Length: 162
Image (cartoon, rainbow, N blue to C red; front, side, top):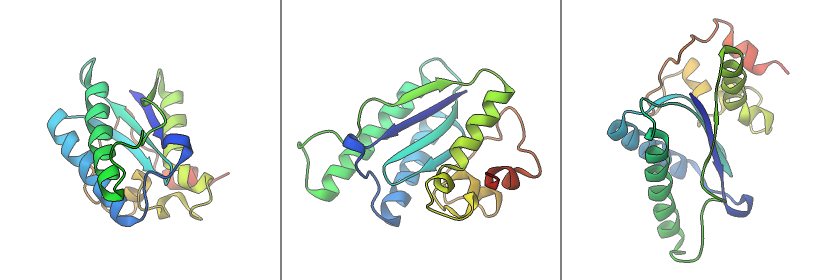
């Protein structure tokens, strides 16, 4: 399992409004279906995103992320009329391996409370563009894997405590 993340070039916005978040979730769904990527958690923010990915094979993450970010970058440029003017993302994505249960839950909590930590919302599950929302309502289209360990029954309380 890996914590995978990327941010906009020069920390710029990569999502502007609900439509762009919906479109990115649709891209995630399409690439997930093609490559059978297990997504345990995610959070989409204005300037960056986070995933907890649980690949089946050695090169699955690089294939998934390359397809996802290149398709998103093309759409992003097309929508703004900026094709050929530079990178959308700061660099290639970063990925950090998850080694044990403690690290897994730490990374899961970090990802799912990202919008809360940035003061976008008062409670983690209130940020629509995050897998924490799925704890209270079904997601738009991103199919989540349960992961190697189930979330505790009081998961939302654990997310929202300082």
